Length: 96
Image (tube, rainbow, N blue to C red; front, side, top):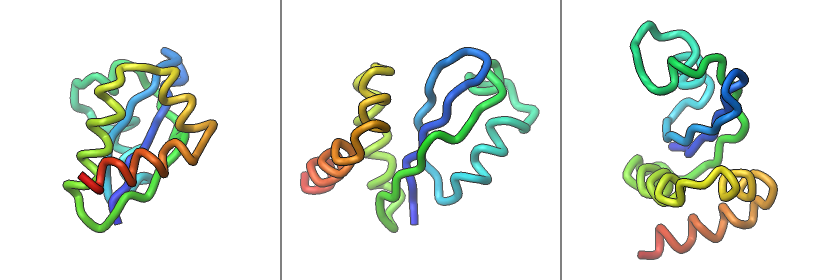
C-alpha cells in the first residue's frame, strides 16, 4: 500500500508532503539521513497524517503532486481537519 504523508517541522512550523510505502521509515529518514536536503534543514519532523492511497505508486505520486500544486499550508491544514476533503481529492484524481 502506498501513502501520501504530511509531516510538520517542529523548528520551522512548515509542512512537507510526500509519498511512500512506509510512513514510519520515511519519517525516520527525514529526521536522520545525513543528506543535505530541504527536509534536513528543518529538523525535527513529526508525522501528522498518512493517507492510504492505493497499491499503485503512480496514484500516490499523482495525489502528492495535486496537494503540492496548491502551494498552501491552509489547504494542508484543511485536509487534516476535514478528512472528507482528502477522500474527494482521491476520487477526483484517480477517476481521471
